[in-house]
Image (cartoon, rainbow, N blue to C red; front, side, top):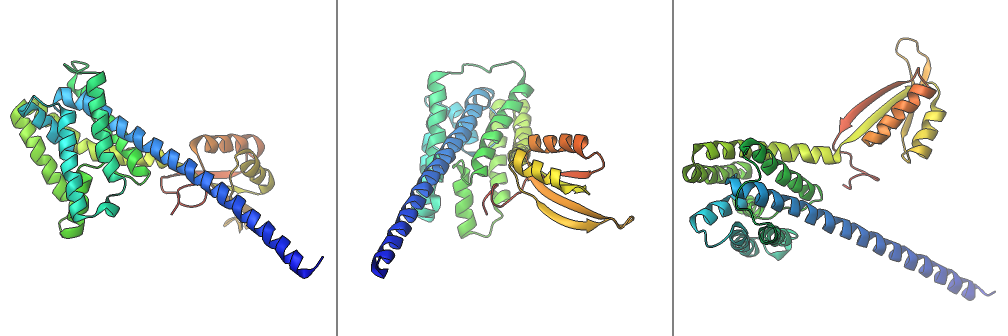
Length: 310
């Protein structure tokens, strides 16, 4: 076979490998996009459910577009909360286009309208004439937890729920104001109006909900990303290494060390696992290597291959 034909054959094989690689990457990107879209909508729907089923009937106006919409729906009862959310979010999207541009808005545009749509759907399918229960504190818990979990899911995938996030983006770009403080002042203003309209009891519940909201969101995000960093010190590393790699389908970093007191040579294996996997590893060590030493530490920021991307 001539050199030219060999080169042609090698080029054909290289193109075939490249074509297969691109096809696999395309499938992987499609799967990632579908997962992102599903999680985004799940988070937005949970947020909308919390607004419709628990915030609106109890007049829990914690702030943001939902709180402002609840107040406006009380002042102008001809339009429901979902209707005012459409109007407010549309106005904020227009402001975002003007001051930030379409590229900077990203998924915020979709989120702003999707959450309004989900609230309107809930109003149409499950109209709420009164609260689900007579216990306002129980209602407050769900009014905080459902939107907090929904927001945590959305924030965790790198998107936003729209609404006042657009205001934060504009303030961040054009002013030197502290965004958190500016948004807190606007939320507090909405809470004070709610206290005036619905009475001091509801106002106090709104203040409590506003305080709890950010705390629960942070806790939910940490819980979603929680992993166990396990460090195993053992003189017999082979079974532990095989269990981690083969049974748990994880990798580990192994080092040779020595005891500070005995000066005996030992091995240190460090791996990152889920809660269930960490429990399995602990059980395995208890049976197979009872003299091993293991530390398990919680971490919500694991970045790298197999976990969150940088």
